[in-house]
Amino acid sequence: MFVKRILEAFPPTVVSHSAALPLPTNLKTAALIEPLTGREVQVLELLAQRRTDKEISAALVVAQATTRTHIQHVLEKLDVSNRRAAVEAARALGLLSAV
Image (cartoon, rainbow, N blue to C red; front, side, top):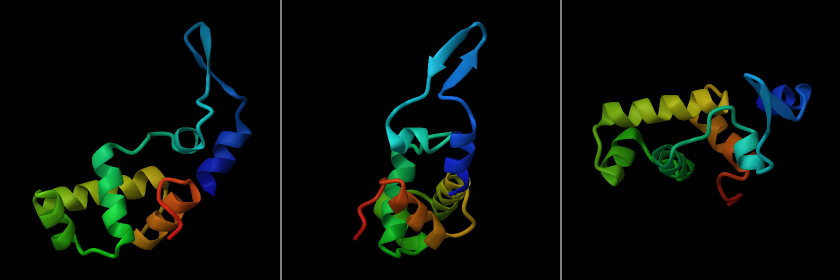
């Protein structure tokens, strides 16, 4: 996975001003440059169930435009271009069950 290769290419600390901060050891957090929000994880779980935008919107009680925005953020954070790839990447990272 692209994100994993980037993280492996850098040393295990991040320099912030004058202090070095250790990277998180949790794979779920470490593998993502920007972690998913709780709502984005909910959207991802519904995507894994092959739900449509309309069904996701109804389940989360949000507008379809909001659902599309959440989906776009998930795709960007997982560095993928479609829903199926997002679900596969999330499963590989342990964000979703393998079922």
